[in-house]
Image 1 (cartoon, rainbow, N blue to C red):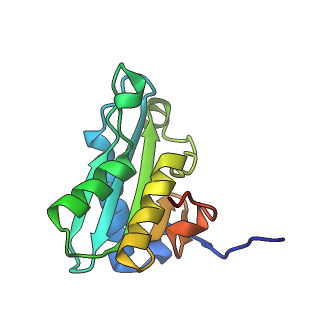
Image 2 (cartoon, rainbow, N blue to C red):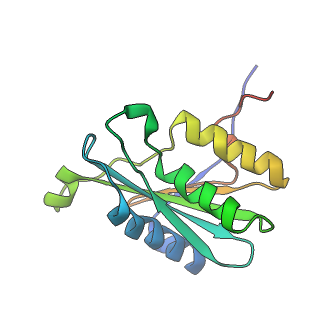
Image 3 (tube, one colour):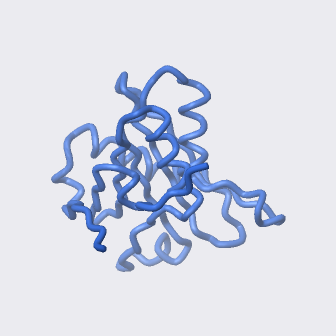
Length: 157
């Protein structure tokens, strides 16, 4: 058996104007991150069907499991504040303390963790339409047509 999917790798300036804005909002959201333990500041921005964008950042806690990833922060805010709107896309950006201080450092792509992948897939299932996932740095963007690409065998109760 084989599972495969197609995704696109491009420079961020090759994205559509709306997707570029979404990526900028995700990068800006990293400033709202509280990451004193990992020093890994992640921001996520969600594009809703009406064109509005909501963003969130990771929030760590000394009691480690109590923290929340940026993707789930933004996604849950979007679902709570706009329950009737479908989610079109999510962009994810990150910055580490070292990257912030070293202008020549090439940041790693901030792929979502397993919990965030599961949450995104469930949001897709709930709304019945795919959620485009854009994982971005200043140098490149990986664009997945659906969150299910990132978690093909998601848990289903």
